Amino acid sequence: MDHAIAANRNASTPSTGLVLLLGALTWLLSLPVASPALANGLAGTPPMGWNSWNQVRCYDLTEDVVREAADALAATGLRDAGYQYVVVDDCWQAPTRAADGSLRADPKRFPHGIADLADYVHSRGLLFGIYAVPGSRTCAMANDAYPASGIGSLGHERQDAETFGRWGVDYLKYDWCNAGTVDGLDRKAAFEKMRDELAALPRPVVYAISEYGVSSPWTWARPVANLWRTTDDLVATWDSVLATIDRQAGVAVHSGSPGGWNDPDMLQVGNGTLTADEARAHFSVWAVLNAPLFAGTDPARLSGTDLATLGNAEAIAVDQDFAGSQGRRLDAGPGYQVWGKPLSGGGFAVVLLNTGSTTATVSASIPGSWAVRDLWAHRDVGTDVSATLRPHAAALLKLTPR
Image (cartoon, rainbow, N blue to C red; front, side, top):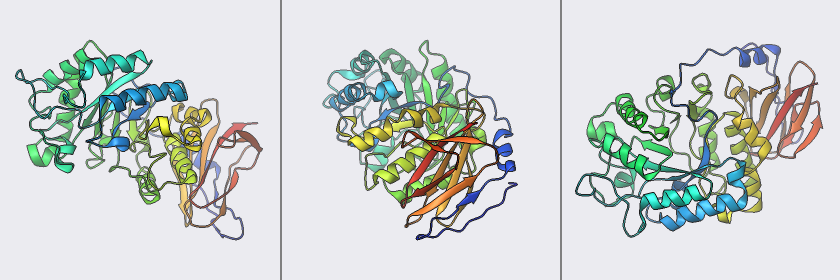
């Protein structure tokens, strides 16, 4: 990359973190063209919603939990902010299939069945998603001792797709779960098989695949799915967030509109040990990455701070704005990172990230004349691309040509 770095970070003296030259901006706008995306007409912008796993994991998943999440998305304003999909993750299934081989819901935790639950979600102005796997075992069977047998889609791909269509499913999360080791499947072929079955349905279904970035799916998944995981599961710690951010640095070229998105995993805002600063830093980078935004916490019990983070319309607008490239890491040094991406209308979004343990100033000197807006403070801050940041905090800035 053709730019110089002036890195001189000092905890007690605010300092410049990065200097960007014109070559960096030119580079953002001249990326190679990604391969054609899955031609199902869906996910023109990164999907947004709620997923059950980070909130309740396996055994606490019930239809009431899902109904309450749908209610809360509507009541809190998150639905209207763009969080449309309500996705039921693993452990919704009965321990065995029905006599005709079809999947069915656990009768104790989902007594009214999945079709009824999908109808309820739809009645709240939301879309409904569900979880399945290409092999014979779900992840909860392997990792949570979920007492089931034969509930994977292996050998039932068409039947399961048709079942999902009848139930009113709008979104499928299809999770690898060791299907290569256990069942001898090939990742790409297995994901393509369900893609083809979904394509035959009269109902359009967003298709999300997850194999944790093992086979570099960003290099082959654009014609296969609408989104693909790029990394292992994200957990609610700063170390996990930062490690996941680092893994996104080389995959940007393969993401983009319409309909094909790198997925660095669900949001952990409101969970674990993340501070408010860390949660906003997490959200800021996800927004610049054009990442799918799926809340994984109880939306009815969000703190005011976490609700403001998830519902920040200006940050969400950055995530939903694809102007030729998802965000890239422009550079990094001891204690800082700078990410940026072009925006529609000729501006840029920039994340200044303090990865260190002391307060410091991170700056980017960008040729040209810019009006700079701080999207967390919701105010214009002049012309300098700079912020003094607490440890593990980030500034999300919008640069508009003056």
